[in-house]
Length: 119
Image (tube, rainbow, N blue to C red; front, side, top):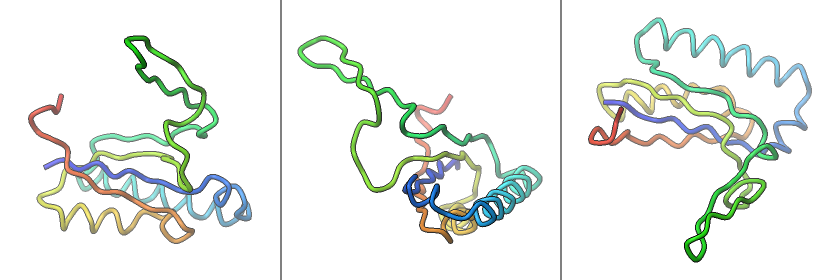
């Protein structure tokens, strides 16, 4: 079964970390991704640019409206995502627990991919 690991963090908190700490987190992150690739769990993912680069589309009265920035204001922003292949939720959670930004205030939402709509 595939799971999406959505990685969120407060961008201000992340940017406020000392460079050495951010570098250490990212070094550990790259090592974890390589491990997931080697083990066959990793199916894809990406780090996103800052929330300031986002454009949100909405429909209002039958017209598409474009807004700069994220859809909703929140304390944390989606910073990246990973799709992993796991035998069950427990295995997906075990991988998610190892995502390095957790140790500096990030969060990871783990959600099964709906197999009926998977490409």
